[in-house]
Length: 525
Image 1 (tube, rainbow, N blue to C red):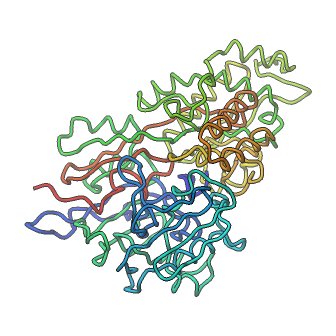
Image 2 (image 1 turned 90 degrees about the vertical axis):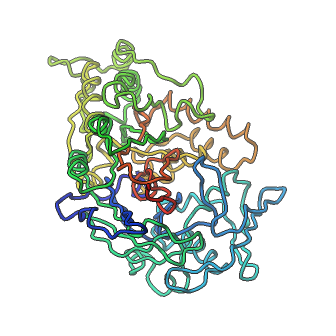
Image 3 (image 1 turned 135 degrees about the vertical axis):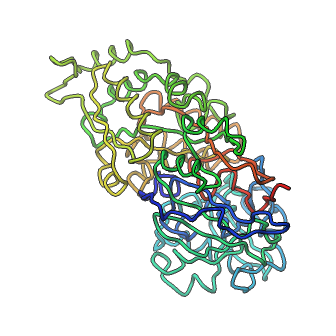
């Protein structure tokens, strides 16, 4: 979905994408102190006011809180976890002392207030601002304390405060949507952006005044390489120190003793949007039939080579929030029965027709994304057995985005931490068609009500019931065909200590991967 996720601008890969990592400077005892990694996508903006880094780990910025290896909240710009009132409506944060932005100016409460108020401002083009809908007021109490007052008890609110904080003294003096801060940001994080060649690379240097200590990786480059095969080729050639790769390409490095594969479990799903504005995909019977016509298990085995699991909705099956009993069994016979009963009758070529409308629609996927291509082709093959013709097409996001209202897209999404993060922007009818939010234009009053109940209740049992309702409604009326939850595989030179992975969201690149904590890496001796 949004550029917040990996549905970002389409990128070009080329020889200019990065320099040879071996050309970096040497650190203590001659150890290499630079790293170059290959990522698949880049953000549209580097301003947190427009959504960049909202889930943490931006490298340039810090939030009040951060997530550790086990996805537990820990203090960052706050000196401690927040004090929460008994009614769940007030969160008080005491700020860390002595923190400065990379331009040397001090960080303080006014920066926190400015950040959140600006994100929530109607004039700010941030498609994710509804994630902060619970905030009634944010105010500073002196220079070192910030108090959030909420409209309702929003159980995961503390998780939202991993949101990066920007310097009021810079960002407030320019247009929030188009100012230079969107491409030349200043933050408190472990790294300082030194360059951004769009479609090619982002370069960073260690922040010598970082409050957590200057990183030992002094120079860090993220090479933007959209094509999976090109990333693998350049990793093998030594142009990259690490890269994210699909399972079949990661497999090619298993016998390379100089490299190590790091696997991260995720909330990252692949799904097919079924736009309500399309005469075919907007038909309930078509949606229900596709939901049981797809062979998810084979997709996991053949496309992901076991590195993932079947998906029946945005919530992974091993999550405590998953609604047991909502699994859909692969049943092509049932798919045909659903279509027969709804009046979709096979034509001479086997493709079904109803009231003169042929059961056929396009399915777009981004060029160069082999995983999405393979998912799209398998989905189309399964659909054809039920009498539905799907024309798979590759394109850039500039080509795909204008067509999303009526054409299906092989999309991705998912965010750990709380079910509200996964589901609200994906399914709520009020954000339908807002950028990459609710790409299917899904509208279900029962789902809308349950999503509001889930985010406004402070009682876990009530919240579980609400999200169970959402998942059961998706069985009755699927606005998407969820296919798989995929594990992320990274192949990295085995020359650093300190690498680990977190449970990852759909977005993976700047925020995720073994370099989520690159500021903690140390060279192997």
